[in-house]
Length: 429
Ligand code: EPZ
Image (cartoon, rainbow, N blue to C red; front, side, top):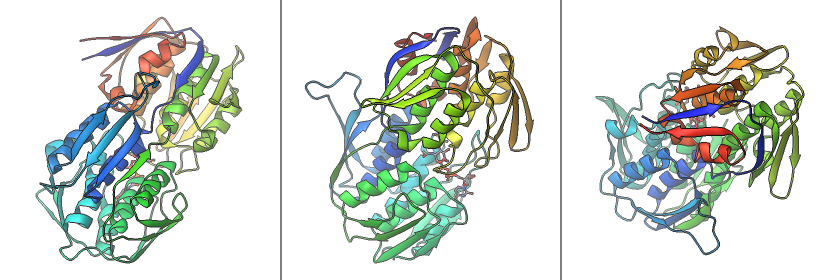
């Protein structure tokens, strides 16, 4: 298994190209199941999760072509996928595939909407919490699907199609909003989704569904109205930039010091995180190219923050921010309100000398003078990258084990950081 070696103490200078958003690319790929015609997606990141979803969609019969670059394209520019779900040959998503990637459960909405049936394995628990799927199932029931659970599989049936309805989520869920939006796009009549997730990735998927022929109002707000179409057509759509990757590198610069332009990043996608970084002492500017992050040798101020649905501070940046706060001058507090067990990085950060106290959903971080490199273990995607960030400011060598977690969601992480001067490399085997 590959490892990543980081030698701390070098500032970051230069430019990092921000990739397309993983959490938009995945549901956009799944949306291809809604149409017999081809969906072309540009700016798709090269990630293990994208490859895994290609495999899963292939199992349903989706024909996927990964096209090359255009003249003048940078060799690392996002890839273009052409997904054609003309013939869906199988409406079952088996356990061995769904268990590898939770978002693959989301095929359930498009499959039942278009094919009248779907049999999808329950995704099971994962490292950051129990993560049930009840909101997805309630949304499909509201749209007229019959739902049964048998031997770990959800069976959804709507032989005469889905029908528009009012769906009110008890709590904001990104995934359940995707399910409701995609299913409603092929349902008969109007669907009203209340307490919908406002995340930019939801709005991006809605924009693509509109190009495919659904009429959607209010995407990106808590109240979304969808007029379903009898059939959806093919379309072409570019995935929006990854706000979590953007925030991660912004935090890395705040941690290591330096001056980096995050090329292609859009500040409005992560304003709350940028505000927190300013409070902590980073200089944030907006340029024609993207976002510029600077920090000179001055100390970091402690912060207090709660994770929240968009536009609040994202749970997907919580671990990275915690790594940063281990070096603040004073005591910080981070409350995790979205997932009940997303603190796996705490014990690993402690191995580097961090002082963090956990009490339920609250982490209290006492800033320390120095961190010292050590071997650490990646546990989930965002936790892993927090260890890399901590390594950038630790004395000596930090070796991050089990980096396959990182490859699920960060494209060329070590190259992007190394090209800005970090001493970081992948060690094979
Ligand atoms: C999405 O997960 C993201 N995944 C996550 O990113 C992200 O952390 C999360 O949204 C929150 O922003 C993708 O987009 C692929 P939720 P999702 O449904 O949709 C509860 C990463 O690192 N809930 O918004 O699965 C749930 O337990 C990943 O890239 C129910 O109770 O998250 C949680 O407490 C990790 N019942 C809360 O809602 C349900 O049916 C929010 O979860 C669904 C969710």
